[in-house]
Image 1 (cartoon, rainbow, N blue to C red):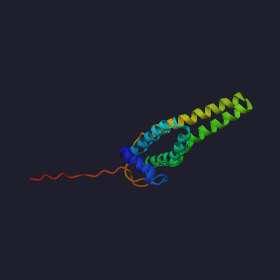
Image 2: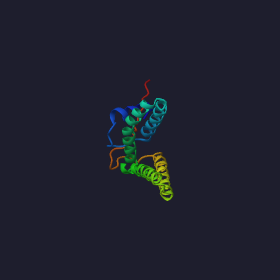
Image 3: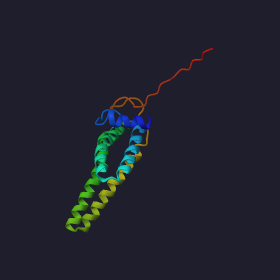
Image 4: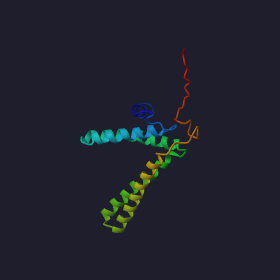
Length: 151
């Protein structure tokens, strides 16, 4: 899948769809697109917020479909997010209550969530399952083209 095909698929065809599977190229091209667009828009605060919110849903859905391609449930992407959110909430509470032990606990949970996100990203590098799995047919389409020689 090319860069443009990936963007079209994620933004136009499967914006909210978690059904099916996403190839490595679909996931990584769309991740690159999201990072670049968010970086460019970061210089314009209001536009940055709108663009970030608009890209959250397709980013989540393509990650879920990528999990499906690996033969895993899409709920897997919630583990790192939950760790980061929980750690941040504990740290905010610790700052408010001035509790150093709570701040340490929140920091550890936040770091574990971030490490889980890194681990998930590394996992997304691996090829998906060959052929069909319980989430559908593979996104990889191989066609054998026979060459003919004309005299």
